[in-house]
Picture 1 (cartoon, helix red, strand yellow):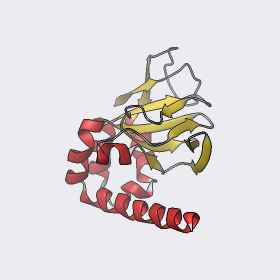
Picture 2: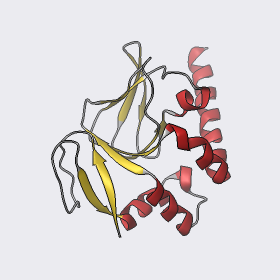
Picture 3: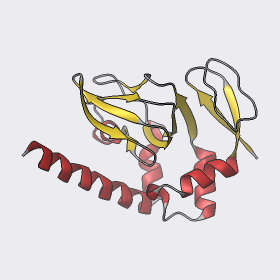
Picture 4: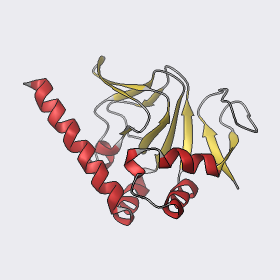
Length: 166
């Protein structure tokens, strides 16, 4: 089976069978997407069939180095899980964090129904799985183990932020 991968900008990526420049479609094997998801701690409790369902339900997007993925104070664009690459979190022009494979972002704006409080900028070629804003709640309720792992990560982030602010 093949899946559809949407590119934000023209980019080159090894292992892809077809590349069209611009906002075009790229075909990638579903099996490799499932394998990538299986290696992420957020999805560690899901069975192979559940991972396949996630892979078929949500899209991927690739961002070029330097591209803004989410803009501070502008309506967000979904829940992003980093599959490959790195990004920085910038608030009011100041870098606050670095994100890598397995990290996620965009959830706070979606869960609070407010605009994002930070920019997220790709610092390398960045490949993300994206769960659209209107689908996140249903996904988390259907996959409580993912919701629990997400809550654990949020608690660690909050603890680190409290230590940092002290």
